[in-house]
Every structure is written in C-alpha cells, then in structure tokens.
Figure (cartoon, rainbow over the protein chains, first blue to last red):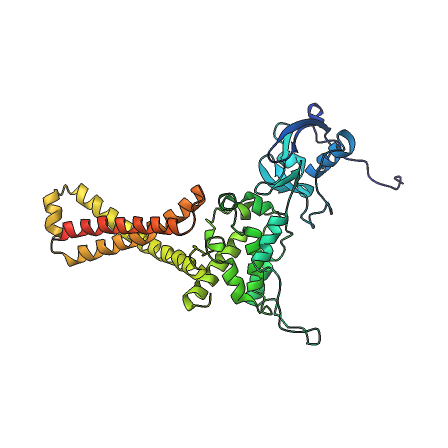
Length: 255
Length: 117
C-alpha cells in the first residue's frame, strides 16, 4: 500500500540558472522617485503579488502597496507590470517576466500616494459623476421585480456587471491621459449596466451625465480597456451602447 | 461665472453630425478616387475634364455634397484633436473650429463653382 498523504511535488520547471528574479520596483511619489532593484527567489506558480509581498516582508518593510483578497475579487492590487496595467494577484511571473526580470510601477493616470499605491478617489468620484448608483421606484414593501435572465437588456447588463473596480482599464486608457475630465471606461461601463437595468428610474439624468465631450462620446475606440480588463469585460462595447442611447436621447430632446 | 462650454445636447449632436458626415465621406471618397483613376488612366487633359464637368448639375451636386461633408466632418474632428493635444477648451476653441469650417466651405465651394461654371 502506498503511504497516504500528499503526492510528491512535481520536478521544478524553473531552470537552475534562473532561480532568482530581478525586480525593479517604483519607490517614491509621482514627482520624485526612482526604480529600486531587488533579487527575489523564484518559486513555482509565483504571482507578481507574491513577489511584492516577499520584498515587503523580507527585504524592505517600508515598501507601500495595496492588496486585500489575493484571489481576483476585490480589485485593489492592480499595478503596472512591465509597462502594462494588470491585477497582480492573478498574474503569474511566468507569464510576464522578460529575461528573468520584471518592473513594477503604480497604475498610470492616477496620483501616486507612495511607491505602488495610487489615490483611487478621482477614479471612484467619476463613478458617482456618471450616476453609477442604482435608483429604483419601489420600496421594501413591494414584491421583487421579475427580470427574465434571457431578456436583451438583462443580457447586456450581465456582459458588463462583473467589474471589480480595479482601475486597469482607466490606467490603460489614452483618452483619460489626454482629457483628465473624461469619465473613463469603468465609470461608463457601470452606467451602461444601469441603463440596462429595467428597475432603474434615473436613466434620463444618467445619459445626460455620461454624454458629450467628457463622457462616452470622447472615446476613440482604441480598445485598450477591453484588451486589458482582467475580467474580460468590454467597456468599449458598453461605451458604444451609451453613445447610441445618448444620441437617440439628444435627437429626441431628452437630454 | 458664465459657462462657455456647449450644452451636452449640442456636444452629442456634433458627434452625431460627424458620424453621419463620415458615412457620406466614405462613399464620396470612393467615387472621387475612381473618377481620378479613370481620368488619369485615360489620359484626360484638364480641358477634357472641364468639358465633362462644366454645366453638369450631377457633378456639381456630387462635389457640393462632398464639400459639405468635409465642412462638417473635419472641424469637429479638429475640435477633439485640439482639445486633447493642447488642452484647449471653451468658446475660443469653438470659434476657431467654426472659422476653419467657414474657410473650408469657402475654398471647397469656390472649387466646385470653378469646375461647373
């Protein structure tokens, strides 16, 4: 009888010559800072967040970064890894290391608080500006609204609803960089889910809030948000939907 | 303080006008290119081209539509480019692009008239 317990670990897939990882990490603020180099042991199935945590717990406890759930649900650990915004908890080093090296920086298009931590308040203020809050007409005394899962509006909302607010799309958007007042892909995607919520009563004001030069009509359809969204949402499609809805409202004189 | 920005409705209607004019331009550019290739490959002289266009309401009408689409499309696009590149906003930007539109209209319709009359 074989001995009970865990099976032996598989042989390492990491070549012996690359048992360490060269990591460059942004230190400081936006205005004054520099990349600092660290050597981190390479491990199987290591994520970028594992690497940052190793640095903070073992090499430099002063390193500032942000994370919470570690399993791709909370949206707090997004950073720029080798030039691209990513969720670090679900990004394996195997996928992103170039010649055994990675460079980790804070998200673009957001003020840097310190090191890898950005100030997300402007990002979420734009969700509020896009009227991203649900407003219904019923009370707790009313019965549930029946929304058929296969109805066209519900399907459109479903396609966009899984956003975790990580800011990867916002950080990857050229239009946000060019127009600081642009609401950005995440806020507009949120507004689109509510436009397709049959219970919501605020759509006229919402379309007025998301339309125009600082709203959905500023989108150039570069699709960086769609390419980089870790939840495979297409904010571009949501924004295109808003453009059509707002155009119809403007022609009718509703906004 | 007076708000110098266009209303949201006006911004959306400008975007709509740009989309519609883009669709018109897509057809006009193709017809124009085919015409240019036909004229060049058949070795038509300037006099021969003018012989076909002078007094032709069809050609004058086609190029009037073409110029109108350019006059609508280009300044609205320029407005976005200037706003995003130079952070130029407000009434001065709208006046500048309106001046561009009028200039394009003047040049374009003068050219249409020149090959028609």
